[in-house]
Image (cartoon, rainbow, N blue to C red; front, top):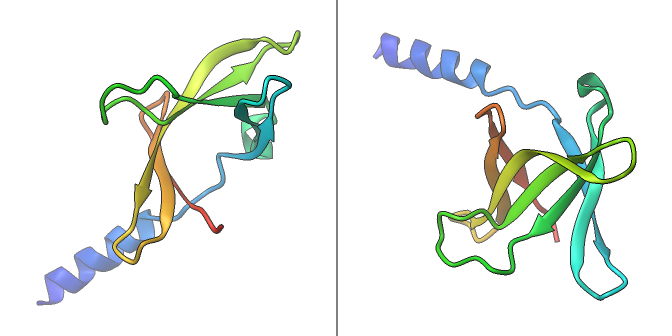
Length: 110
């Protein structure tokens, strides 16, 4: 029993969350929704854009793809893939991974 408690404590300590980026919802001139924002200050404050996958054909495809923007404001490198999920208590959240295969999770409050 002691080993289990110690393992749980170790696992909880490793689950510290850090902010990777923040995104805000916008409507384009053509009426399509998209996301824009920035990486956290610790990651160099890069500008980001996120697009919803309106052509999704199977659940393995991400719901949202997030890209950095280059100096001219053009889409550059994909940095994250996100899926919308629902928790056991019916809360919507996004989860996915970064381009470096780091797990990303964000609980949304509507």
